[in-house]
Amino acid sequence: MSKEINRLHPVSAIITSVKALKSMILPIVIIIISNGFNFSLNFRSEHFFETILLFGVWGVASLLALVGGIIKWRTFVYWFEDGELRVTYGLFVKKKRYIPFERIQSLNYNEGVFHRIFGLVKVQVETAGSKGGKPEVELTAIRKAAADVIELEMRHAKNEAVQQQVQAQVEEEAVATPMIYHMSMRDLLVLATTSGGIGVVLSGLAAVASQFSDIIPYETVFHELADFVKIGAFLVALTVMVVLIVAWIVSVVITLINYYDYTVRIEEEKLIITKGLLEKKRITLPLNRIQAIRIVENPLRQLTGFATVVVESAGGNGENGNDKKITLFPLIKKLDCMQTLEQLFPDMNWHPTLIRSPKRARPFFYRIDFFWLVPIIGASCYFFYPYGLLSLLLIPLTILLGIWQHKTAGYQIDGKQLAMQYRVFSRITLIMEKKRIQSIESTQSYFQKRKNVMSVKATVMSGATGTTGSVSSLEQKDAEKILTWYEH
View (tube, rainbow, N blue to C red):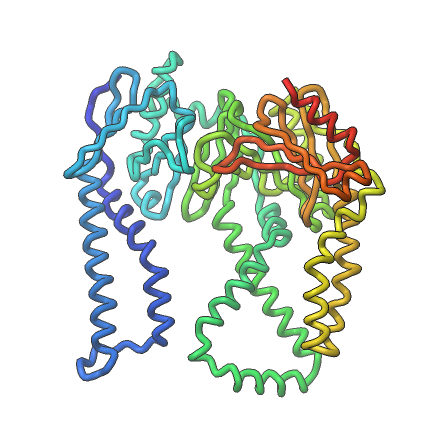
C-alpha cells in the first residue's frame, strides 16, 4: 500500500473557481435585466454608481473565488495507507477523512470541458454512508492514470489480485467488459422527439422573452402579427411549424450533449454507465444496491413500443446529485428491455400478469377532479364568455383520462416480488423485491369503504424521501392480501 502523497492537478484551482463563479451568474443576470440594462461608466450618469457597485462586487467575488480555488488545490492531498484512502484539506482548519477501501461502493468519473482538454477526470468516491446526494470525497481533477490507481488499490485492499500494471489492467478490462446497451444516433433522435424537451425549450423561450417586457415593443409586435394573420392562415401555420422545428432541433442538440455515446456495461456485479459529449460522466452502480426498477412509458412511447428504465438505488449519487434515481436505459424497445432485464436479474419476473382494479372503482379515478374543475370552468365561462365555454371540454377529457388510469391500475405478487402498475399520464410499472420494501400502507376513504375498495402504497429506499408506488382503488381483499404478504 503506497504512502506517497498525491495532489490534485493545478487545473483544479481553475475548475473550483469557475464552479463558484457559475453560482453567481444567475443573480447578476437577474439584476442586469431588472435594471433594464441601464448601466454607464460615465461618472456624470445617474447609473454610474450602480454600475461601479455591481461590477465591483463581481470583481471582488471573482478574486475571492480564484483565491479559494488556489487554496483548495494547495492544501488538498490524498494517499493510501493501512487499507484506507486518506484525505486532508483546509488552510486554517485542517480536515481529515479516512475511508476504508472495503466501504467504498463506487467510483464515479466526470470529465468536463477543462478535464478533457488536459486529459483529467473528476472522481467521486461514494460509500453506503453518503448523505444528501453528496459523495464522501471528491477529487476535483486528477490524471486518469491516478484515478485508475485508486481503483486498483481499492481492489487490492478487497483481496482481488492485481495481475498487471495500471494501464495494461485498465485496457484489458475495457475490452473484456461486456456491453449490454448502447444508444445509437437514431435512438437519440427518437429520445429527443418523444420526450418533453420541446415543451421545455418553448417554455424557456417564453420565460426569457417575458424578462424583456420593457425592451420589446409588444404592442407594435401585436399589431404587426394582427396584420400578418390577415394575410392568410397558411403563413400562420407555416410560422408555427418553423418554431416547432427550431424547438425540436434545440431539443435534439441538448439530448445529444447529455446522452452522447450512452453505454451500459456490466463488470463484477456492477453496472458501469458512461455518457456525455462536452462533459463525459461515468456512473458505477452495484447491482446489490438496486432497490426497485421503474419502467416508464409516456403515451407517445407506449404507442411506438419504446420505454425508459429507471433504477432506484440506495446510497450514492443520482444523476442530479440530489437523488438516487439513475436512468439505466433512456430509450429502449420494450421487447429488448425485458430481455436485457431478464439477463441482469434472472430471479425476477419481468412479465407480470396483473390483477386490475374492479369496474365499480372507476369513478374514483376522476370524481375528485371535479372539485377543482367546477370553479375553474365557472370562472372561465363567466369572465371569458363565449370562448370560456370551451373549458367545458375539460369534463369529458378528465373522464377519459380517469378511465385510462383505471385500466392501467393493477398489481401482482409473485413469490417475494411485488409489481405495481399505475399512471398519471405516463404508464409506470414498478417492480421490487419484498426485502427491499421499506413500508406498505393502505388508505380507504368513506366512499371507498362503501364500494369495498382500497388504495395501496409501497415505498423503497431512494433519495431523501424514498420512492413510492401507488395503486388506487383495488379490491379490498386484494389490498389486504398485499399487506398480509408484506408482514413478516
